[in-house]
Image (cartoon, rainbow, N blue to C red; front, top):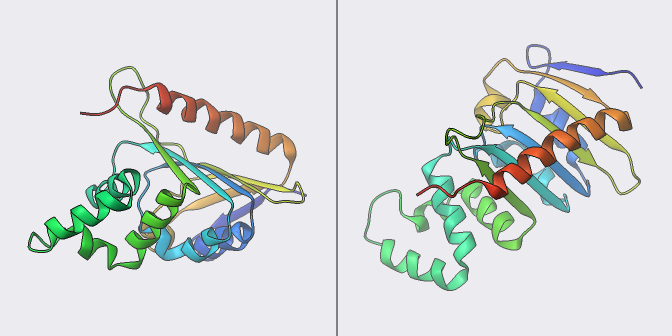
Length: 193
């Protein structure tokens, strides 16, 4: 099958990815910028994906980080955080989790179905700005893509973005190797303080 070319000028890109994500076994994503707002656009499609791994740069939304920490620390820590935040600012965790995108992010992360690694910009690592992905199905078919799309609602709904998709195994192997390079790099990077 030839390369598929998509432009947000011609059609919304959210449905292009959401359709391919339905019932996928694995989704590997080099996101550049990752925001949980993505879950507002393709969250339902991601519910059916078995394994989701995202590698991105360190330019993260502080609210996403707060929810990720709560997911990592577990239910008891979440309950303590909720109780202590009831009378705090509008950014308290309980208010965040009242919003669908943060509830989904917490669910995906705490269940282990989604893993996100960050490649920090620390002078030894590159700034992850590329965008690519690989969607695998149970029957062995793959769809890999590269383009300008960040993983955010703003990118999928409001920005002019392009995406080139390919069903060929050679393209999937190329994207997988790029992904695994940054996944490994993020696991060996010094944690941010």
